[in-house]
Image (cartoon, rainbow, N blue to C red; front, side):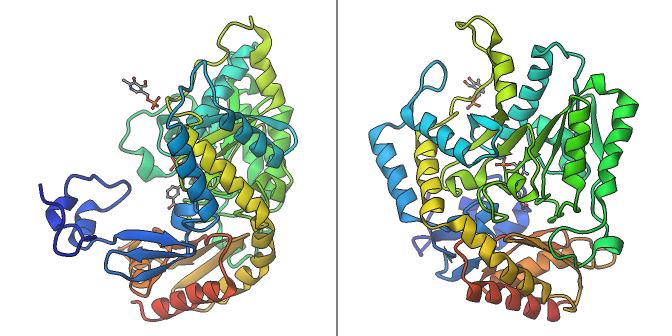
Length: 446
Ligand code: PXG
Ligand code: PLP
């Protein structure tokens, strides 16, 4: 089959058919594709030779920017040295080194790492560890899991069950039994245009007490939340909210899992959002930024107490019947080690923290722009909420995304919320360009 049309990097329309694209309007896309062929620093190059300023770090993942030489070279070297090493009952040094490097960055009590290949796998891994841990300590009745409305925890069956985005759930039957949800914390009447953490809403964590009373603590294994909800459209935790979740879970012997797939590795200006908010969970899921998006990788950080609970049996017995063919894949580990070193060498987390006030001021200058009903931000993340067009929820957001694309800027829309999450190497002038492009686009939009 011929796949190339006259321009070497452009695919003929028929060549687009076989690939069923994820979370994409396939037919619409294939009519008018948006195709990247190169990436470097803050920019993508399209197949028609345009430069696109990346305001979203790919998909919240390329925190060090694109095509960074030390990462590229580490992957090349590893590929040429050892392509793959079996993950079960065998190891390779980079896996242990990367686990050590991650633990060094992590909150104090989280000192063991389980590796997988994505955020979705990280979430399902964490949920399975939570259930197995409760059983291992003689609390096998604790089988319930509690998530939150509007939560995104990937697309595995565990993740969509505890997740709270109805479009991601409704097609897939009964999901998992025994799951309940906290209310989300979004409230424009109380919190619109908050800078950083909103003042209102800590009491929403008390809903957990209600669920605990309803189900009885002896039935609940874990609570999982994103410390900052990203995918649903950037919801920043109200002041004191996460602290209360921690207090209530500790009081009742329930594990607290922070899903930091987006927030880990500098996104909010600290290694983990747990550091930023000053709350230590029992497990942290991560992915994306661990390799700056260069090779798929995810993982779960677990507390020493959890790990030790599994280590009581005979030393020759497998402690956890769980793992992936590609757990701690050599290319991912090499990429991860080079990425963490790059973050450190260039001080990128500190850079993000230092740039955050400037970023905040820039995005909040969108207050008053046509259609904008809220701006919220933390670290180098912002959500800009637009009024929905009557009878066409999401249309205005998608049109904004397309118009920014036409002007050479990549943003992300989830419905009518525009999300920004530039790489931590972003320059002030680039932030200004992203924001002024949005102003221009929104000003001209019906
Ligand atoms: N948990 C969280 C908190 C996430 O944000 C996942 C789990 C799943 O990770 P994987 O690697 O399986 O995709 C995510 C991923 C968006 C967007 O547009 C967000 C994600 C992925 C793709 C798009 O907001 N988050
Ligand atoms: N399906 C089959 C038939 C398999 O043999 C395996 C792994 O060996 C899997 C699924 C799981 O694949 P992975 O370990 O890459 O998640």
